[in-house]
Amino acid sequence: MVREECKALLDALNKATACYHHLVLTVGGSADSQNLREELQKTRQKAQELAVATGSLLTTALRDKHLDAEERSEFQRLWVAFSGCLELLEADMQRALTLGTAFPLHAPRRPLVRTGVSGRSASVAARALSVRSLRHDAEPDFDVEDLRKLEREILQVGKMIHDMEMKVNVPRWTVQARQAAGAELLSSAGASTAGFLSVEERTGRCDLSKALAATVFSAVLLAAIALAVCVAKLS
View 1 (cartoon, one colour):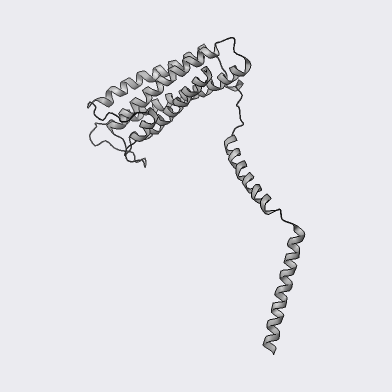
View 2 (tube, one colour; view 1 turned 60 degrees about the vertical axis):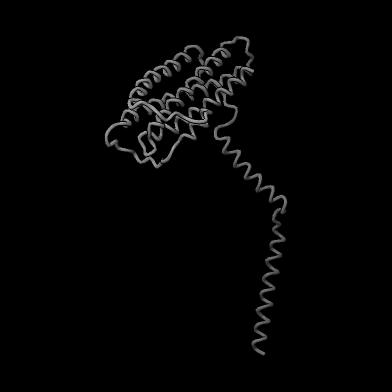
């Protein structure tokens, strides 16, 4: 039950982290707005809450000395995936701080970076946060206060990463993956090959002798047609 709960939390953390990454890419672009900054705040807070819950469960599980080898290996794989999510979240938070400082919302004639993204991104955040609507009204200095809060939260995430490394020592190079690198690409390619082979099995493999006989028959037929045309012209 604990393992399934950890997987569910990690899946939710993955989605929230991916959503936050998507939103950070629009900061300073043509889709940037006060509403986007609010969505960023909500998304990163949700990701941090999920990270705290996931880290607590995984730490308790991995410090259990009664775990068998199979269970421990599975929790170690979850731990590696969890630590990767935290590092990506921290990097995106630092990127959001840099971009938010460079592109303040209420600066006069604020230059925009043409990212190619336009419109509203509320639907993406709503799917990740499972909310029906997002708040649109905010104070004029919302982005200033939010950047200060973001600085503190970056330190908190960094401390979380440090603490988890001190509490549970799981070297990444010792954790074995359950499938080889690029297995998804290989599986899709294998499916295509299997489909091709199934068609080949239904239609039958090419017989070289039959193909040669068909070629000879076609040549004789063409020669007969040419001869008939010549006789018709001479007569």
